[in-house]
Each structure stands twice: as structure tokens, then as C-alpha cells.
Length: 179
Image (cartoon, rainbow, N blue to C red; front, top):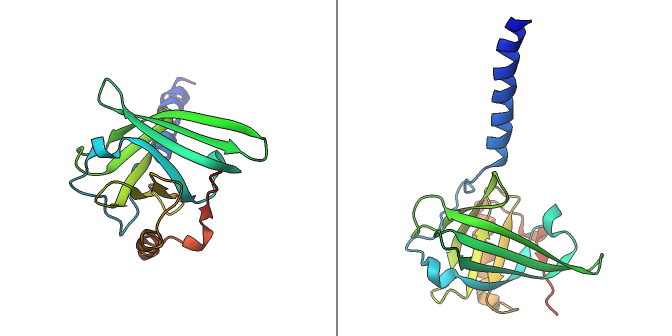
């Protein structure tokens, strides 16, 4: 019995560790590059979600916003809000973001359920920090953000083309309503 415990406990802990690490992917999709010379302070504030892929945490939601602010410890507070039009109720989720490498590279990891972290990569942003294309750690996650409820067609096309080059199926995007 002691031999079984000597083997079973470390193997179980190893499997648990692998599961946690696998759920904590903070990578960037192959072919994508995070924005360099990123200005985190200019990125802070409220963004409207213009488009996204459908996934369980934002299912049936419109009027979605993300507000970023700096925490006293230097991390970034992430405050996501949206209206679930099926349940007819507002939802809010508050998390934390940290830079993967350095603050001038727009590669972050975000957690709403510690210790699980996900990749958050700003791969395109206009010079005035009004429009952003954000990719997760895989081709399952993609967001188009704007400081206003609309986005110019030229920016929309630029972001869609970039996402397609990386391998995203942009036909699957949900265009978020803001009313």
C-alpha cells in the first residue's frame, strides 16, 4: 500500500498540475505579433466591444464594455460589463491583467478566476488608441474594441484582414449591439 501511495500521490499531483497549466495558456496565436512600444496608460479607460466570437462567458450579451484601470500594485483592473438580453439582466466580471514580458509589449495575461490565466494580446491599435484588435491565446478568442459604439469601415476592414491572415474565421464574429 505504501508503494502505491508513493506513486499515486505524485502522479495525481503531476496530472493536476498539467491540467492547471493547460488551462493557463497565455500564448499568442501563431503568426500574430503583439503591439510594440505599447502605452499602457493610453490604453486605460472604457472600450466598447464591437465584435467577438461567441463563447460561454459572453453568451447572449450585448452592450458589452471593458474598463481598464491601474491597481495600486501596478497590475491592471479589468471590469467587464454586459447585458444578457435573454435573462434580461446586467452581468459584471472583474479581473486582473498583468504584462507577460514588459509594459511596452501588448502581451498580457488576464484572470477572472485565479489561478487560471488567459492570453490577452493587443495585435493592432490605431495611433490615437481609439480602436484595438485583441487576440486571445488561440484562434477561439478575438475582440474588436472601440472607444465609441461604432468603428470606421477602414479600421474594421484592416482588423478583419489581419485576423484572417492569422487564421481566424471572421465570418463567425458576433457584431455586438449597443443601444
